[in-house]
Length: 192
Image 1 (spheres, one colour):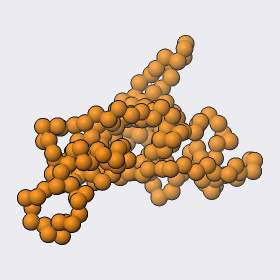
Image 2: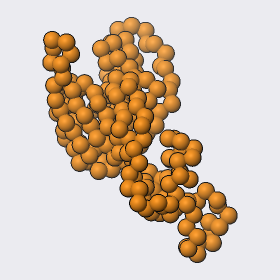
Image 3: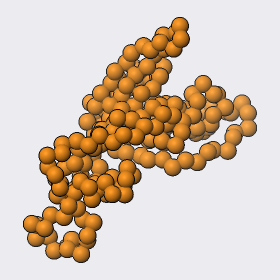
């Protein structure tokens, strides 16, 4: 987690706790296909100066930055109602779950050798307890799950996927458990 900013926002006549979280992750340039199938080839080219004969027959082995003058690329995409989980511990009981988070301000920084650093911002309305929990992660490496296809309403107690998504947390459900919704999830190892 590279940045953390807690603040209050006006929601009508009410002040509501809000925060901006900044995350960065170092990934292989192959993962740029999640943004666009042509992005990797736009930023990287083959390094023909290396004498690595094992990769001669691999046309998509692009490790050299095409235009080193480009330091960061801003990627204009926003997920206004994403589900975002900051994992902590060996099970989901200590996870910090945001059912309705706004994810955006993506920046891609290409690196020589075939990796890149992706930075992005998460905006959400945490509880006071979540703010305290998140503050302990500042500058630390954390695991996260980003579900850009849609979040869950943390105010809805019937939402089985909220707060870790597992009803096996020591509490018996008061109603029959709803079938779990499935979504494509992306999990990333994050670095400072």
